[in-house]
Length: 203
Image (tube, rainbow, N blue to C red; front, side):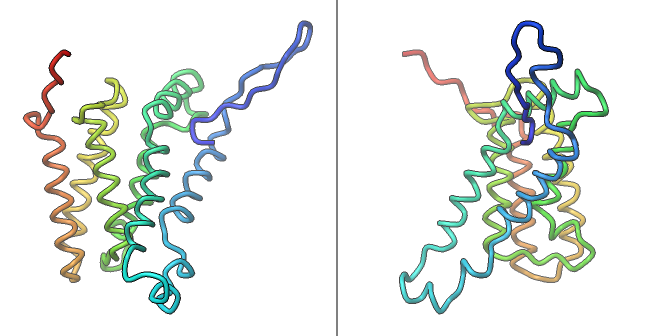
């Protein structure tokens, strides 16, 4: 639904539009649904009395893999390009890519935006590192996004860095503090112009 378009086949003599963007409210609701249902681990998935019967470890990695798959799909360059085009054509009626990325940032890093003292568990730390990795790859990785999309991700990294600095000053949990410090270091690395990888040599 995010960046989506509805299509209705039209034939000669039929009125109306063939392609209609998904309404802004529905796109935003879809993003909010994913933030809550895909990126928060249901307690039923991590019951120790079950997990300890079937494996010594693996739940963290398995859940991270599933969440990263959703996150990478959600932050794909093609989706951001569709959002940018919808905004260019439909103006304020469209789900702006800046609004979409802000919704994702605040959903993935919700512990840093609430009023409570920030405390991030291991499952969420995995997700948040993956969020930075995904944006860093699109800013300075080997598969960097096109100009407009790259600028959006760069801006998100800068905003996130400033917000994490404030969250670090509010937390009293050591694991969370170390995680936030490491996240800011990873952002700085992604934004460093010297971090752009060299182009692969020609065959």
